[in-house]
Image (cartoon, rainbow, N blue to C red; front, side):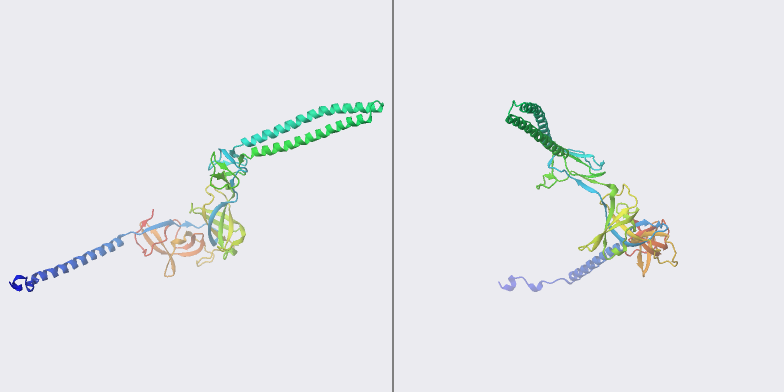
Length: 413
């Protein structure tokens, strides 16, 4: 059998023209379907973006108080008390009682804790016993001295009459003088014992830890059964403090001012402080002192600011922003009249530039209105508005890019 008859005829293998055309049409339809799906997706995204409402944060414009001064400088810092103390024991001992609890108001001299005073009490009792023994010895020596003085007087009489010898008289006199010396020594021993009693009593008193000044307990640092010591013993098993007390009446503000602007800060300069915890509360204050040294690492100078009136809401270590005010001149606004008074104050973050002109977005119901404003000087985080905004209107803070006039928005909750 020949190879041509037994093998397959490869020339007979070919694609039918009808099937070829049908396959090409399927590919075209697949491409059209994929392209149509992509167009639908893009259209859906565009529609979603157009119908999406921007989420904005709003804040009400507040009325500017008469006589408010322009802001020379802004800074941030913390509330720090001038009097804050971590109360420690003067001795190393075990804690037997703790009366200091966070939030407790204490007066100067109040007991915060007690330490184990058993050893000190033993030393105090021993010192008192030594004093009693010395005093008893003095009484015995006094009796002996009385007898020796009588014998001395008798010896003097007998020696004058020639009955007794001079040697016997000297012996009697020496005995009396010796007893007087022993009495003087015993009295000094009593004084020494009294000093030892004072030392032992001080050791006992050191086992009672008291508040050094009136204030609030802000931290309880030791528990009953723990060892406390005025120095760190290492290993983490010995406490160095029992409680931390803060004099709330000494709270003030401490800020770091860039040394390039420190010339703008003067003692007694008025300041407006704003606590991070209460952003709408403007607290009047004034510069207490400028610390006469600079931090070379940060290129700053430390400034301490006193509150005009303290408030229970002002707590140590709270974050605070301050605005140093300039009362020497009128606010430098952009109004047409040099004596114009700003009508309202709005957050500086609400102002955006549009063509080099300041504008804000005012909220009306659910839509925003683009409005041009006439601005003045800064007041901390706020800025003066002479025209364009009235007190009580809600403005958009940090408007999102692309926000348009008349666009419907959603208020951030």
